[in-house]
Amino acid sequence: MNEGTEAEQAARADVSVARIFREFLVIGAISFGGAVPYLRGRLVEKDGWVDDKEFVEMLSISQSLPGLNATNLAILVGQKLKGVPGAAAALLGMCLPGAVILYVAGILYYHHGDRAASAAILKGVAAAAVGLVLQTAIQLGRRSLDTRVDLIFMGMTVVAVDYYRLSVLWALLGVGLLAVLWHNPRQLARQRAAKAAAKAQGAMAGIAEAGPA
Amino acid sequence: MSQIPTLIRVFAYLSILTVGGGMAAFPEMEYLSVDVHHWLTKEQLIHLYSIGQMAPGPNMMMIVAIGDWAGGILGALAVLIAFFLPTALLAYAAGRGWKKLETWPWRDSIQRGLAPVSIGLLLAGCYTMAKGAITGTETAAIAAGVLLILLHYKINPALLVAASAVVGFISFR
Image (cartoon, rainbow over all chains, first blue to last red):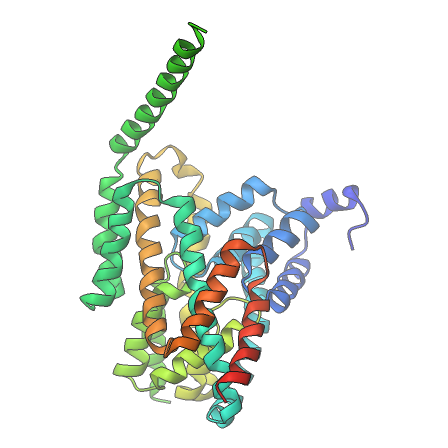
């Protein structure tokens, strides 16, 4: 559809709502194993509708908000391209294939789920799903947890939900509020200052070391 | 029929808990749909989530099946709308407001503060899932294998899901 960069730029300037719907419908239908890599591949690399920096920013907004990352991203990109109709088309396209597939799969499972073969397959997949979620948590943790206090907040959330059986809502509000207050603007400024000071000191040490030699 | 208002209430509530990802709402989803409303069993919920892993699109789409079982096709539609519309409106509003908040110092605080909590919720959801899914050495080995492969190689998770389905078919029948 896009023959060259000129066509791409033209597309970026005015993408029709139908085109947005079609593109997200395709992503919704092919994104096996997690939608985010597919969204990036098509919206950033193939279509050029958002650039890489914008995509990362949209992803980080999506992760701080309630809602699935895939649908939040669809809304943010759709909104950027065509406002309310764009966001609606993107959301609908993203959800439609999976919704139809799982509606049918749900009916099939309801009637045949207790067969030995399907129970065996699903047992394998459920175990794999645990590994998948753990990997996602580790990946997110590596990227966004950089102080020891963050690990404490993370641990508090797990213990609150799984050990004290606190509702997810209260864990979210309680520990969330605590963590936001801890990372208050003054604290963040202090952290930045400390980091800058450490960097400066490192540079000084480098000079001092280099000096005598 | 009478289940539809309840479905809407439950799934609209669950949707606001999905900070950081759908799995964050999993413990509450299990509690509400299994223990409180008896729409399905714990095992069925884990199975539906697993079926969702094999399908494309957003990963919590299996809620459609819960809606269908509890309230037919209208139930499925009600659940879809209840689960996706409120957070969609929120994302839309945030998309418009986020840039303007760039100079608001608490914006960074909120992002930094919610990160560890959302990862904690993800882990809590994972633990709830694991309690039902990890039943012995074989399932633990599958989970560990998937985790280790993903940590060391860049590979599409869907391939590992498919491989685990095959392993399950061979060893658990």
